[in-house]
Amino acid sequence: MNMDLVNVRLPMEDEGHLFRLSIREGVWTQIQKQEANAAHSGAVSLEQWKLQIGTGESSVSFIDLEGKILLPGFVDAHMHLDKSFSLTSVENWSGTLEEAVRNYSSASPSFTKNEIKSRIMRSALQALSFGTMHIRTHLDFNLRASREVALRTIQAALEAKEALAPYISLQLFPMCPYNFMSLDVDAVEEALKMGVDGIGGAPHLSSTPKEDIDYIFKLAEKYDVPIDLHCDETDNPAMRTIDHIALRTKSEGYSGRVTVDHLCALASMTDQDAHGIIERMADARLKAVSLPAVNLYLQGRHDGFPVRRGVTRLKEIWEAGIPIAVASDNIHDPFHPFGRGDLLQIALIGSYAAHMGRPDDLRTLLRMITDVPAKVLGLASYEVKAGHHANFIIIDGSTPEELFTMLPERRWVYSQGSFVRMAANKAEWQDKTLAHYWQEASENVSFHKHEFAKG
Image (tube, rainbow, N blue to C red; front, side):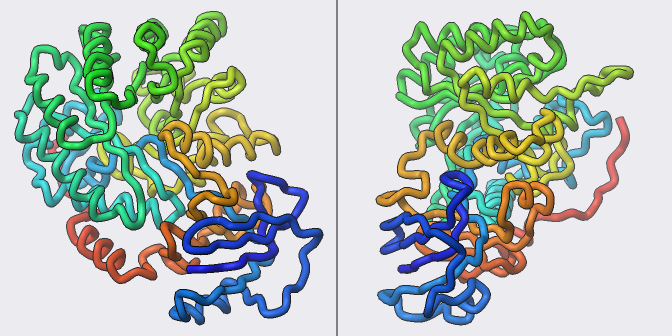
C-alpha cells in the first residue's frame, strides 16, 4: 500500500512543525517538514479515504491527517499472554502475588493447548487493536506439574506466534520456575531448542536465588539468547537479587542483553540504598521495565496504613540513563483482574504512580511505550525514518496532553503493509484472517463469573 500523508504531527520528532510522509511498498521513503497546516489539492481525510479502500495496489493514496498525531507502533515489553483471561478459572481472594502464583500453578495442568493458544491470540489481537505491534510475553513453565504441562504452553505460544506473524511480532520468554535446579532442567533447554526467543524467571521467589541466576546465565550464553527476569517484585527492601544480576551481567560480558522487571523493592528502600543499586544497574547497562498497573494492584497487600504501592523509582531510573519502559503485564487473570493491553492507558497509570505530569514527563512516557521498549526488545529499523519499515498508529489527538487526558478511542493502526484498524471498534478488523482469529479466540474467552470456594 503506497501513501502520502500530509499535515501529520510527529511529537517524537518535532512538535514545532507538521510533516509530509511517504510510504512506498511498506517502507518510509520521505519524512519532510511542512511550514503550516496547509490545504493540499487532492488529499482526502482519513474518514473519506476509508471509503476508497480496495483501489489498486500500485496507486498512491493521498491522505490529510488534519493535524492528528502519528507514532511508531507501540511496543509492550512485558506481558503474560498465556495467563490472560484466566480469572474465570483461577481466583485470587487475597489479591496477593503469593496467592496468584499458588492458584495459577495449581490450575495450569488443566488448561488445554487450544485454551492457552486462544488466550494468547485474543490478548495479542486486543493489544494490536490499540496500536501495539511488538510484544515480549513471559510464559508459564510449570515443571512442578510435569514436563508435558510446561512444554504445552511453549507449543501453544509458538503456534500463536506463527499465526500472528503477518500482523504482530511476539517474543517468547519461558519463566524458569524458582528453585528449579531440583527439577527437570533439561526441559528448559528443550524449550530453547524449540525456538523461544530468550529466557526468564523470577529468582527473588527462590530459596537459592544466586544459584538460579547463575544457571540462567549459563543457559543464555549456551544458546546465545537474551535474559529477562522478574526482579524483586516485593515490598521487602532487603530483597536485592538485582545486585547479583548486575554483577553477573558484567562478569559474563552480557551488558545490553539483560532486562530486569518490576523492581518493586526499590520503592521500599531508603534513597541511599536505592541510589546505590540504580548506579550499579547503570554500570552493568541493564535494561528495565516497570509494570505500574499490576504493581499498584498487588503490592502493599500486607501493609496497614500507610500502604506501600510498589511502583519502582521510574523517574530516578530514567534520569540515571537506564532505558526503562512501562508495560501491561497481566490482563484479567488472578494477578490483575483488569487491563486491556492499551499502552497509552498504562503510560497514564505510570504518570499517576510516578508523579510524572509535567509536559516533559508526558513526552518521556510516550518514549517509554515506543522507542525505549523497542531498544529493550532489540528491534531494528523501528523509528519513523526514511528506509525503515512503516508500522505506525494514528491517534485522534493533536498534543501529548490531549492523548493523556482523553485516551482517544479513535485510532488507525497500520501494521506490516496495511491498516488493520480504521478508527472504528477494535473488533471491526479490516483483514478477514484477523477477523477470523478474533472470533475463534473470543469463543474460548469468557467474562462469566464462576463461583469459587473461598479459602
